[in-house]
Length: 261
Ligand SMILES: NS(=O)(=O)c1ccc(NCc2ccco2)c([N+](=O)[O-])c1
Ligand SMILES: [Zn+2]
Image 1 (cartoon, rainbow, N blue to C red):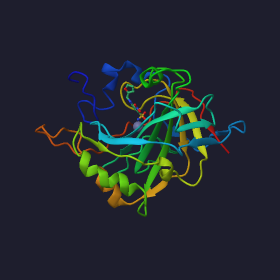
Image 2 (spheres, rainbow, N blue to C red; image 1 turned 90 degrees about the vertical axis):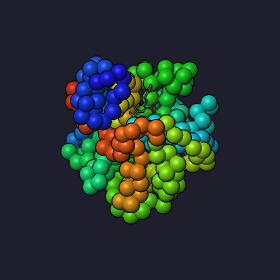
Image 3 (cartoon, protein in one colour; image 1 turned 180 degrees about the vertical axis):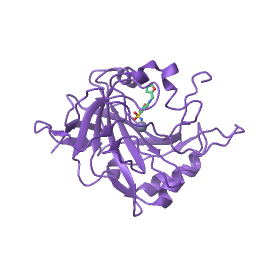
């Protein structure tokens, strides 16, 4: 693998990430498959998402996904409760998806994949001064994962898919203010939770995963707009369509997965 240019291709994909990121073979890697039987933990309270004052800043193409960034200089949008000891601050959200007609979620449920997976990334600003410090700490991040399945149009996803033509190429960004990701949540906040990692390099084992059981529906047409994005920059000769940007499930290695009610 040339330099650090990890990706999702044959030469630089998930199977060879361990060469530059040995933690890829670690004991708490993500994503994982969620089996049928998961222990229900009555002590697990509800997850609370306080996004009312959240401030999105921009939407960008970082060459791996499409990302909406938030102003996380104070506690204006946090999640707390559930398995979390502290409130965690919303930093960004992004997606993983498949190719035409094939699924692209990262986590799977009893071996089944969904069309796509949304990650709402939060960091423990109580214990850590900077996101990058939190991203390298075992209790540094909390990522809420939401499954997307194909069905009806999602009324609020349009604002995101409509902005995608502005961020087609790697390294592009555009203003994206006033978006509250609360509109992307399913009706139920029932979840599975386990200790894992970032699902892309540097694969830090710093994530408390909170996966919502109920998927949201998006249309094939909306998903198709994700695939108009490119992994490559405008100036590059290669035009690589951004799709199948997901890591497959990793070994559970004895970890416990808990289920809220
Ligand atoms: N698919 S994910 O939610 O696990 C994920 C993966 C990587 C990163 N970032 C890569 C990184 C972190 C520190 C230095 O570089 C993020 N994130 O930053 O939200 C999220
Ligand atoms: Zn992700």
